[in-house]
Image (cartoon, rainbow, N blue to C red; front, side, top):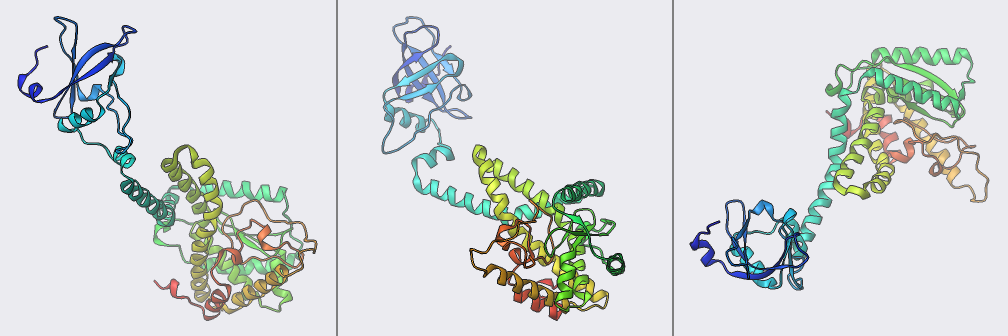
Length: 406
């Protein structure tokens, strides 16, 4: 193949050894790097081979080596020629000088390897990007993706989850039938007053259903698809404190807020989005990191959902002309009970935990005096996942909160 005299004459020729894969012995050659439209090309001139034509390698046919350190250059440059073997060049400095003169520019990865400030800058940007993805991107993406989850799928998921809980620690309610009927009637009246959720779920119309269970401490939680579960213990706690049923209705309003805002399903989708995002960002180590992130972030996202459910409850109770102050009183009473339980001597034998391994977003919860300290329970407790309890109780007693303003 004929070579153009101009560019080749201007480019330096470097001695090298070509291992072409056809022989165990290297072929001595002279290397010329020439500028091209898509990057440098490489020409090999065989030595001691009269009449042998130069071998031409385009930019794409060469696995161009990267410099690892400006201060400690490698002893030789090894160039990958793909299926046509490899090339060794001892004149390292001359190689990179000719490579730069031919128009080559190191990529970001190579510049990071040789320039610590750039590496630290990229790491800092990556950390900030991951933080923003966790704090804002994941909840936003989950809220949007949840639009496409069919109600029928949520209903089946809810039924399966409740069945597993019933097969585990939950027991049938021991409340009198009359008492359950009374609370069901108030729940039905409240559900009729319930406004639709935010505009993003304007067409979401889940059938609301109230279930009663025993077998766990004072608690209430919402399952995806419209089922709300209230325990006997929270009903009894309100009665023991002399707090009116409006407090329990407020709890139910809070749970309806979880349902219409699809918090339970959004939590599931959030963790899926977070795990997928960390997998793309961190590769093979993402499994361990994302598992830890799932445990750590669930409470942070729960706080956001609980505030949203609080605002919904205040609006719904106002629409039904019902006070929210009793709900605040119940919240404070439960908080005081938990604090008293936490102050018990460490040697005191706690009762066996009855909390489930995982639950959807939930409303005011606390352990009664027979329960374990809240740290031992993975239930998404209102007191563990919410902002300051006194602040929230004050907002409920006033019937509004600054973050609820539209």
